[in-house]
Image (cartoon, rainbow, N blue to C red; front, side):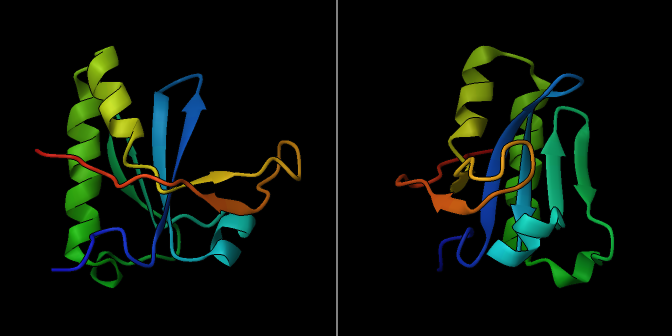
Length: 112
């Protein structure tokens, strides 16, 4: 079985309203344009604009659902476990805009 994050960039970000949010991107280019395919927060999982559910592998939607379930508990321990799902971070090269993706050297591990 392949790693469920293969070919996808998952980026964790802090927000004022939801706290931690994880966004799934199909490529560096989609990240730089701000076009996410999935987004998981404590409120649930959203499918991105111009993205159909059937275009997203089941492994990705299952992982996003696991992240949502962790974040919905609103505990620090589960929030940190959800944060470890991130596979990439922003290099900060464009300030508040999306810069370039930088791989995080860790293996995501979510059970749920």
